[in-house]
Picture: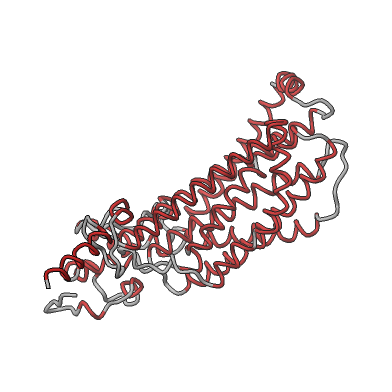
Amino acid sequence: MTLNTTYDCASLTKYAGFFISDQLNITEVVTACPEHCKLAWGTGNPDLSGIGVFISYALQLVICIVLGPGHIVLYRCFNQSRHDYLESIQLVALNTTILFALPVAIASFTYLKTGPDLFEMAFIYYLNLMQFLAGISLFCSWVTCAVRANNEIDFRSIATVFVGGSLHTGLFGGLLSWIDKSSFKDQRFVEFVSICKTYGYLIPNLPPVLLRRPPIVPSNRRLNDFVLVCIIAGGVLLLMILFRLLVHYEKRIEALLVRTAPIGETNEFWSFKLAACMVSLGCTSTIAWSFAKMHVIREQLTQNTKGRVEDNEWGFGQVVAIFLWIPLLLESLGLLIVVITAMFGASSRTVLSVALSAALSAWARWRNGNLATREDPELPVTETLNRPVGLDGQEGDNEGAHGLRRRDTAREHST
């Protein structure tokens, strides 16, 4: 680092140091040492954004898509004998999601209390939003299993799901609210971001909702109370309008449900199931958006730190995070076979064999390419594999090993 006459650039080594003292002028510090903008990225967070837990997030996204809004499609495709099997998988998925999300919330709260880097702050927000909506998405689809068309209620796991769901909703709702009220809206933080962008440094893309300024001055409590009353009154008025519209178009909605409801299901149950599916679909789409944001931020971290990150290092917690999903994946193998059999019929075995062979072939080619690149990273893979090798194991000329033997024989005759 360079040294300035009025400020020692080596005195600040962490991003949190910008906000420890109110006497520190952020504009002057960044002007004296623009490289301090790189401190906003940090070195990653292996516990929350490491390679192992990131694979777990990808598995969770797939599970939310299949067993969230896709659950109603699978439920209609199967007969009654397979409904119990699908319901057991749904319950395992919900319990696994809650079991995985609660430690994530506790770890996020711990890291946020220690003043993390901007990368960690943005990643933690998208991560907690994803975990919060994952529980809601699977819960909405699980309700359609717990309450059946014949008004039969499954009491086997309602207590467990209720307690876990309450903890999940309360913990993540409070955590997201606390993050929203954190130092993202601080004027000094906005000053840091603007001055770093002036010098051309890339800053982690933070959620726009966290950067939005509250329109009401916090000191004016009367104005806050008045606006709150207006919001409540407006919400009640909106509900009354929606209710009147539903009553007015009741016959048309009932006719639509009669045409779309499956055989053997009442209109009331089908409308409830359809509403739960729409809520689950909305949550799952936001989950996919949050996962994409997490992936983009993680790739930017690798590019801005030139690969010197801790996220690509494996640890005990990352291995445990992956193996947490193994029971659910093993139990879902039967569901996968049933779905493929229903889609392809008698040719399902051929489709599975071809897909498995293609996957193994692609993995083998990728693995050989990586090994060849590691042998000589300065040369293309084709040159590394096709270069002739001499008798002593060293790279020879175009003649190869036979050329070395001919030169040795000629040297002996000349002597």
